[in-house]
Image (cartoon, rainbow over all chains, first blue to last red; front, side, top):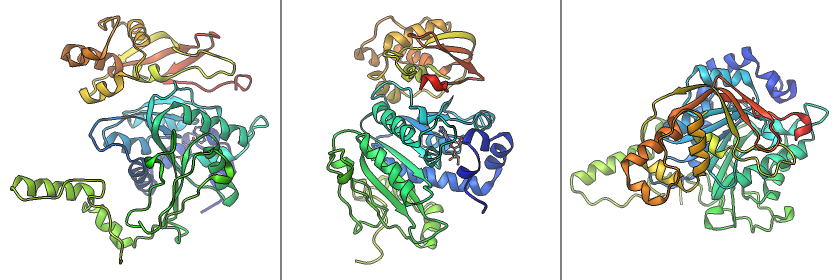
Length: 291
Length: 122
Ligand SMILES: C[S@@+](CC[C@H](N)C(=O)[O-])C[C@H]1O[C@@H](n2cnc3c(N)ncnc32)[C@H](O)[C@@H]1O
């Protein structure tokens, strides 16, 4: 792979017509973005009540990530700085509403109206100064501050990011915490350079039980505590939960033996009149490999 | 852009104290059918600025929404259908959103509002 796109050009220039089309017609990219979005949805941990929510997709691009939101039955608003990417999203007839906007200028939504937000492979772009008027710190501050304000209390934002290095990760997380969010980072496959993915899992509002950073599935021993909510940088808790499920196991999940499959089976058993344990958030969660 | 989004959007130009609601300038409206979901509407109702929705839907040529609404109306299927239509099925395809305080226009093309701010507006 060549150098990071973030180092080549500003996003609205890097993602021109040609790149936007290339990006969206690569089956590899489509698959990866879908997986990242599914995982983000999972970490968003919306109430399991079947009610569609109003979600944001920040840096929605051509709509690959938003599609996952639609598939899960939700309404969404996607914003992106690249007109070319949005044009492809139009072509693909995504169900969400689209906006041409720069997250670094702050999100222009009313306070407390959004039920949750995801962002897939986009927020690290804020760490670059693409114009003389750009100060990454001010842009991160504007972004996280406005994100915090528009989310409903207790709502979450899950941002999958590709920070260039440790300093960038800390910069991003630091501004998230200073805006009032509680939470931390969840790392999947931390030992694989290729598959390693990280997600900022942020909860809006006063610290509560629900503000604890979730763990990678089946990795309960890698526990971490919730931020005390002082908003003080010193106090932030960076939670790293190890998630190194072997490849094979993941394949099985993909073939359908995930939660959905288990729920279906349970329903079938119930209809047969069998006694079936109630469905909870633990249903179909992966077990630890050993105790 | 649907009125759901319009109802959430606010002008965030630097110095603007009340950027809501953005006034709608209509050039072209399109309607697209969306699956009806009463749970979504009931859940959203509390977050909707009703007057803004009524005015916005009027400017888009739909004037079936009652001027006032309260949660008890959510039991009425007739009400929910109208709410659904106004919120999710009317799209501003071409036109502009206008900041209520500064008059700055955010153009809407192919259904996509351009909310990018100029440097001196950040
Ligand atoms: C790798 S793409 C991901 C797109 C989409 N989320 C997906 O999963 O396919 C990153 C996107 O972030 C967008 N982006 C970068 N900086 C942005 C900014 N400041 N505001 C809004 N979008 C931005 C880019 O235009 C690009 O579409």
